[in-house]
Length: 102
Ligand SMILES: [Zn+2]
Image (spheres, rainbow, N blue to C red):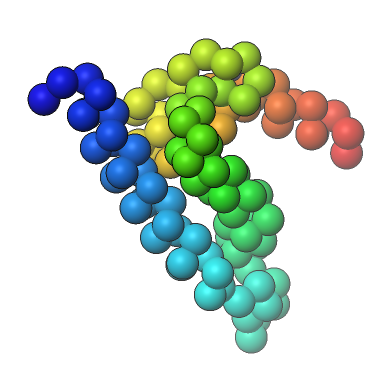
């Protein structure tokens, strides 16, 4: 298998994983009988925009590139977090920035 084919296969798998999450998250209820489910808040408000952005980045060929530093995000991270749009370093910086604004 050449490099181009394995990248195609990887992107195809990632697209399938991302689409599964979109389908799953779309049907989650934010409010349950016991109150607002914070895991659902995280999935729909934090993860979902990144998942949709990741899908559009697969389409435009920039998937796997950090949106901040433009370095390649390691495959291992993309397998665990298919919707990752930043490398770990930039994601930590971003989370610190958000935390500082609170
Ligand atoms: Zn980065």
